[in-house]
Amino acid sequence: MRSTLIVLALAAAATSLLAADTAAGKAGYDKSCKSCHGPDGAASPAMSKMMKVDIKDLKSADVQAMSDDDLKKVITDGKGKMKPIPAAAISAADIVGYIRTWNK
Image (cartoon, rainbow, N blue to C red; front, side, top):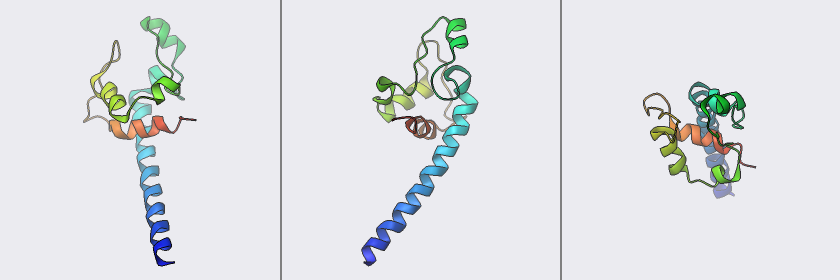
């Protein structure tokens, strides 16, 4: 019984921590990613057309199949026409956590 309570308490603490990270990830996404990738990760058609590039849907199976480390690398190093986002400006780990909430 006692071990069950400890597990439940740890799960509740982990859930709270993840919620805070997800909120920070959304804020970072809104600041640094939303203008090109859209509010829901589906990509901005106007930005795709203007930049003459196919912007990936962040909810797509191929993006969601990428490892967290690979997604962090794209965020901090950039890719193609996507400019890098300095680690000092955002938390790539938090943004990846937020992007993962779209995995269905």
